[in-house]
Length: 346
Image 1 (cartoon, rainbow, N blue to C red):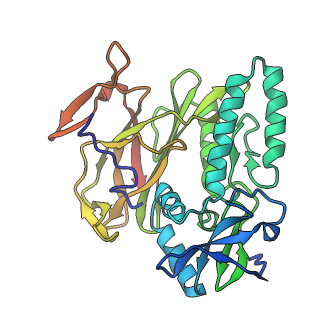
Image 2: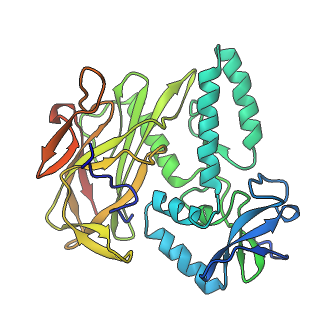
Image 3: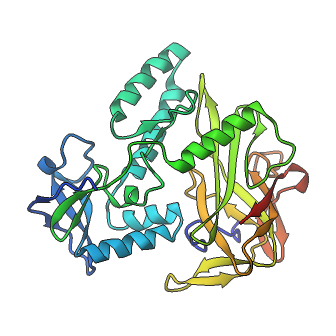
């Protein structure tokens, strides 16, 4: 699929302050934002994954630059946030959560019995206790989460929750609770498990096959339409994030909607609607992107046709099949296999 559209991070837009004077080793970068090495003795007793005797953190030359960076992150997708911070060589709580998910995947695969899995899982939870949190709404959710992960500061702080402003170490100001988006997804999942719906509006949790669940949510935030998809799979007695899925959707929205992309210099630009939106790269935790904005009135209607690699077409050898839509080669997806979500947002 050499002509396939790969859209992730390409076209989408998507204080408990502990102030300490500290000697910091700077990484030379021609910017008002830099990576600095915080000595290991300053990191407390949290997780430290750095180089040598410390851990890298973002450093801002002023409070104003810090606030500008926060505003920038708030206007882009979660994957873009992570990519931008990682470019500085800084790893944050979201990187740690991804590592923890890989570890859980390995634990589930290696366990030979439920008893063995339960023992390993308890050790796993203890390892990340006080750093990542379980889902206290759904006892069957085995995944661990970044506390308050919707808070943009969880992307700014390093894995110990630290960053630097004008030479002073700061700690991110976050709640130690489950993020609102995770809570909403969980409540939708539990509701849909208990009560099958004939029509999905704005949000949906559905099972394309046994032991697999797909979550979709379209919502307005900051005058923009955000679209989120993720997947879970059954593991022993519970469920966890499924890191092996690809996601596709076709969108059919009212004429007062404009699709957005990033221009050459990162600016927001109006873009044509693509024949199919494809997310099959760097989406181990699903995706959460800005699709566009309402340009007239205050209501948005329409629908999404959604698929994953579980419902797209494959040949007899399991290889992805493709089709051509408006000159673009895209994964072949049949309307008869689409899960349709109606949109009615204000």
